[in-house]
Length: 304
Image (cartoon, rainbow, N blue to C red; front, side, top):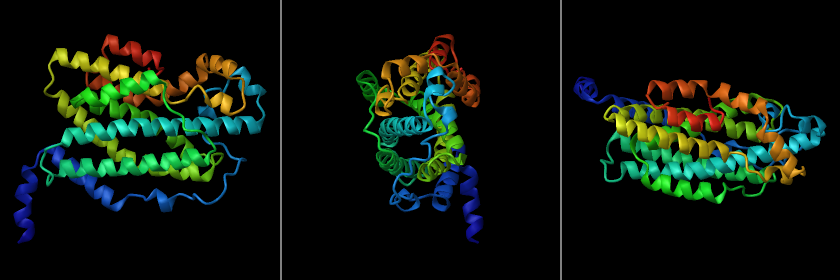
């Protein structure tokens, strides 16, 4: 009898409600507590990389070929810590945008309860990234002041598809890197665990961001679509170019100016970024968000 009374309500629910209920069920059955899942107590083993070396900004350059294995490993540890620190910065932006989106909405709805669940997961991720960067022996890398102030404006003003598509870009770019790192036995084990936790839980966040982007775009006119396509592209450019802080090279004991120059011209790294983001670009194209002005910024960020 109970099931017969539930079915009509379930059939009447909007598609997004079905999605958020599935995401809530997934979070209830497949979630991690980084405080206990990650091995925080074992001292850092410097025989390991911090990330897959192929993802280093210097991999394939003349400078990379001159580095000792110890220097390469220290560089990847600093780069991984920088990516984690950038992740914390953007997760703070994300949490505020999502919370603002559900403010004053029905808290008994699956949408609001999923949004709060996502925020809770992002809070745990930020703490996990902070502890991971600290264990890697890195300082607190922060984006340049210009990016911080743009982020402050973006989290305050962005709404609808602009907010959710930018969230999606940041999550997907990080996701493709971490899928490689978590499977790579050259990467220090605790970082592999961190990456695995993030990949599993972020897969839910990306499903939601894609669905919300499409839902908001369904009511967008051509002018709004073009404006927000450019806003999303600029936000994406700032996020991606902030991932590896310019100070990682000096903290790794390298010649900072030479390293920055060679990293900037590194075609291997640009190719890695483009190939890993092909699925993301396909989605943005299908959503009508790859306008000519937007493409300028995606190309500058080497995402296409």
